[in-house]
Length: 355
Image (cartoon, rainbow, N blue to C red):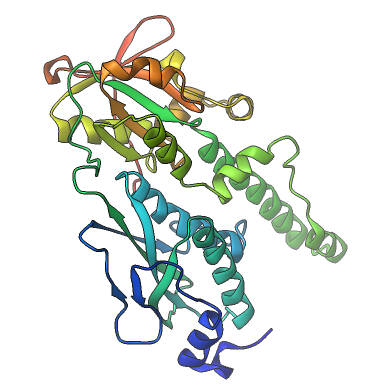
């Protein structure tokens, strides 16, 4: 392993960016100057940023650096797609402590570039600095949208259909699985340390977590995918969403964002919420309500959007998209209809940084 101090800040930047070449005509100047120079030729510009802090947003006990780079990029790319835009460039800033090596940064950028290459995105700049508290990542993604074609959260209208891509709750169940196995591991370590059992401690170096049959849940948590494929299919089928958002904090929170900004209400049906079989099995194992996981789990990065009721047949024919309800007038509230036809008001739990 190579200590970063041997290269220094600028040497590290040169090392991890030496093979990065611009792919987009809109990138006039990328890495290597005080600023990147971008030209979108009259199109509207979309900009989104996310900060990820070790111990708050990710745990390096169970996510490796390469997957972290991939996920950090994808969650930003997802925001651009959620505006019906096309991601073009990315700016990456990292603060890292002494425990990280040059090879760690190579792995991080390998995952990052894998995500960017999937959608033809140029890495055009960023910054690196030291940290006393672990790893901090700040990523800004820049995209473009055609004038009049960008989709906001505030366009939903009464009678619009509410649609969601993919399935929900799997990423949250993946997180619960990882946390469970982490707890089992540290419990065994603590017991071995109390007994001063050196043989057991040595064996625990080869600890094998129980992930059998749960691979899909792990993939959804560790390697999420931005749904640019859905954006492409909507365009091909001439479907123009009236509002859209990506699901990072859970279906309930995101739908309430749309309702608030569109000044409307909604009715969604529990029986229509798409849930994968592995998600349901894991929720039962952990004695959790699977619908609650789908509503409030988050990190699915699926697309939640509304379309005019006239597009009903098109939506029914769209693969991997599920119709889950409809928009109502504001005075009717935001309601979940359960399988036994009871009505409950939707609550936004989302992500609580103080929990």
